[in-house]
Image (cartoon, rainbow, N blue to C red; front, side, top):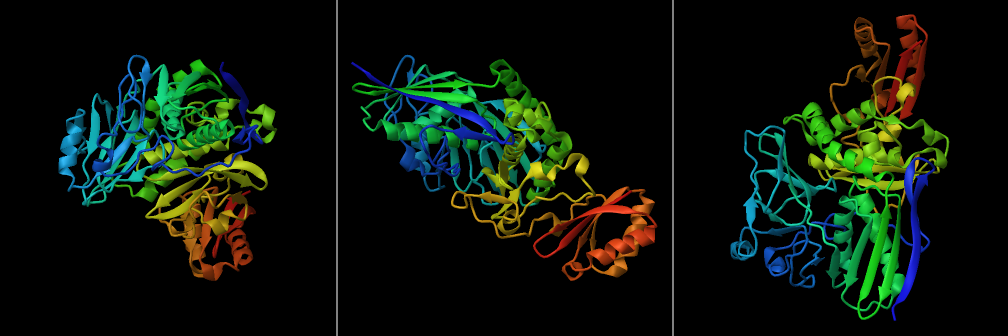
Length: 508
């Protein structure tokens, strides 16, 4: 006789109408996001370690990391990417005898973005020490390629390549999902890849068999719950509202996970539309000559210009529709709250080779979501939601772009054990020359008259001044001088950065 445990529902609710929260009956700790070796991840190992341990989804058998199967049963490993050094040619030959492989090479004259479509084989990406290459799977954190890389698991992949001339191109390809009706695995570490694939198919019912009796049910339930939460944070297009886990034990362990979605048919439509929207964004706002921080700012600006913060988010939890918490709310409906902003930003940046993760925490005591971006090995906070001031925006300076921990901690809190430390302000907007209209750096009072002359000639109604450190205590004097020289009344706000001040000024 089988025994049943019903875990009950795990409900996605609005974090104060701004952030998706996971309310779980069983207490758990949210894990950090790690593309390498964790959720649905691509692992980086030598081929000699993965030969004989490569598995295929959907009706295929594998050895090593999953049970052999046939019919409607599948086994899976946690590896989506394997890597080898150039000295492992014999191992590569061994792999090639096991599967069809297509080598992926980006042409030197390729446009910024090329979609290769569906690949019927596994894909090998050769390592090139003269290029910087990043790979992202389904918008998850892009990882630097340091060895020959073999891609095997289903997903939409984005390979960004920066050459010696600092030109960047992006090539995407898809390995199709061959879904199973019944998955068979040896241990719980193999479950995340299955759940990831099923959620991308918008599955409502997922059946998994652990080929051993699992007596520690509480631990298993907590593990699966944490895995699902981490998958949600790792892959920005995934969107569901509730899930329920049921476990039945006999000689093996039968797991059934039921998912529900905001609007299943609408999600299917939006998922298809997103492919076109994403491609159009890349072809519209990107070009090959952009550096990583320029690609980042282009997307940051695009989202702020195109997405409106859902005003219902200011009313309370019950007023925000589930879709507004998703990438699709931001990108298709152009209406979102913070997690929609953050997931859209995360997906696009990872697709163009800028490693980006999703942070959950609080902002002024309210649960909130934003991003952590890596530029030249340094981590920076980016909050597109807070930067998007809509009608309250004065001037052209956008705050919360590439901030460090010190600045963000004035308004935001997060579990710093889960995310990398951010100490640099090298790529903060105050230190970049991005050619932003009506944004001026003022190094001395003598320069003010020249700046105001440009403002008048261009008939601007607002502008921003970045004050050099030596002028940080001169804000009042500068504002008075602006009003006197232009003979106009003004409105302004002041942003105190780490060691500089920004004045955003608007004419009344």
